[in-house]
Structure formats: structure tokens, C-alpha cells
Length: 397
Image (cartoon, rainbow, N blue to C red; front, top):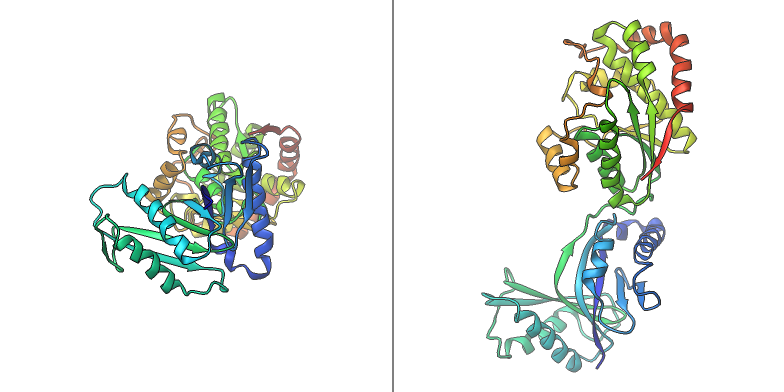
């Protein structure tokens, strides 16, 4: 009887997408295949298996220790099941296969006293119901020498049985990052600074399927080159989830100096953010992106009150996504730790957002007043913005 170890890949909300489901599945399938393209060429197979993806070595058991690190960070995957696969269909053949697999698993476990069998029957032509299959498999385990009791509510161990094109058994599974396949929801530019917030915002947008193009505003000599290195490292950490990306390094010193010299200090932060959004909007149009992503969290600082956010919005024509808008600082820091950007963001190198900050910045600006002030200085500002775009450096991450 043919039995071998495989990986079953679960995907969550993609299955609810109806008309778009096939599109999302193909994107996710392509991402998995791309990440595994250099592994065991010719023998590794990745296919769709009735609501799952199957990863297997055609000639032998799969080496999950090699495969999983390469696909663990792919958006859209909710879980990985360490399973065995068999082409056996008769329940009398499946019972000893399940028992042998379960006994092998139990050799590595201690303190287990109860179990249950849970069955998913995607093949509706199979002659037994899910409950009947679970009962038959469970009976063989119950009467074995494992001396386990059945507990259907809160068992110590659950043996999963899936009846699909083939039959699969598994106990252990690993959680994936979830979300939607990267790029399935369009494209957006990310205002990436060296702080905690914007990398997390980029991660969350990418997790919802938005392909991100990070932009960093660099202001030498007021910030050091180490600040730029910090942002490059943050982009590289995000790229572990997204794959290759292009980071725009936009020179911002001349723009900041011009605004510092022509704007009242209390309104300077708002004007700087409007300038950044104008630059981001231009780059987004160049890259055919559909939105701008920022790390704003409502009320966190003076420039992130509702009035301040409203006062900067009109600087851009594209929608602005703010994934962190309702999160508090501790939630953001917890997420930064989870995605491994916290230690990089903690490096003590300031970015352009932290220089020229007024002691008492305005926190309830009037949008019409801000727009009028900008219009009065825009003749001098516009060429500086154009120059910044022309001198932007593209860095492949």
C-alpha cells in the first residue's frame, strides 16, 4: 500500500472569493512554486487538491525541514499540515494505515490520555459519511494497545482525516501568516521611515494582498547614512514576506529647508507631510500604483489627530491607507516584534520626520488655511519636489 509523507497547505478566506477564487489560487500557487523552484528539481510537485495545495516529493517522503522555511512567510497561507498521503480508498485498508501513522506519532508524545478523529470529506462520492469514517478510524485506535480514551469535546490529540482525490492523515500543523496572496489587491507606495510604525503598516497592507513600493525621504546632513541603512534593513525584513521590492530613496533636504524658512514652526510638520504625500503620489502614478500607505495612528502625535490627517489628505489624489489607524503604540510594538522589525527600528538613528519639529506643533489645523498657505509658497516648492523625484535613487531589496 503506497503511503508517503507530504505537506498539505491550507488557505483561508481565498476559498470564499467565488468568482475571484481561481485568480487568487493561481497567484498563491505560483508564489509557492517560485519559492521552491531550486529544491529537488524535477521531483518536487506542487498541485491543487480540492481546497488545499499538495506539496510532495514524487520519489520519496518530503523533507519538510527544507521546504517549510522557504514558504512559511507566503501571504495567503493559513497553515501547513504534516500529513501522510495514500491512494487507498477502502475503509478496511485505511484503518491500519491510520493506526500505524498515529502510533508513530504517539511514540514522540507523553501524557496523552484522550483522542478523537475528525474527518473532512471533500469527495462527496465516497460511500461513507464523515461521522462514519471518524468512527471506523477511531475504533481501530481505541482497540489498539495505545490504551487511549475517546474525548470528542476536548481531546489531548486529534487525528485529522481528509478524503479528497487521495486520503490524508495528519495530527500536527503549523500556522501560516494568512491574509491574501501578495499583489492580489493591487499596488501601493509605502512611506517608510526608520520608526516602529511604518514597517508594520507595510506588512499589514502586504498581508492584505497589496504589492508595496517603499519610499524613504533622506535628509543629509541632518540625518546620517546609518539612518538610510536602517531603512534599507527594514525593507529587507519586509521583503522576507513579499519577495523582491524596489526602495525609492528620495532626497528631501532642500524641501525641508525651504519649508522651514517659509512656514511658521507650528505648521511645519503638516506642511512637510503634505510635501511627502505629493512626492509619494507622483511616484505612485509613475509606478501605476492605486494607493498610498502610511503608518499613521489616530491621536498618537500632534500630526496624527483627525484634524491633522484631514489637513494633509488633499495633498494626494490617490486613496491613503492607514492600517494602524486604530492601534495603540503597544499593539504596534508587539507586531513589530512579531515580524522582526523591532530591533532595527530601535537603532538610535533619527530620520527626517524627527528633525525641525516644533516644541508646540499645531494639533487641530484648519484644512483651508493650510491649503492657502501652501498655495502662497508653491511656486518655490514645486521645482524642489520635481528635483527630488529626478534625483531619487532606486535600491533593489
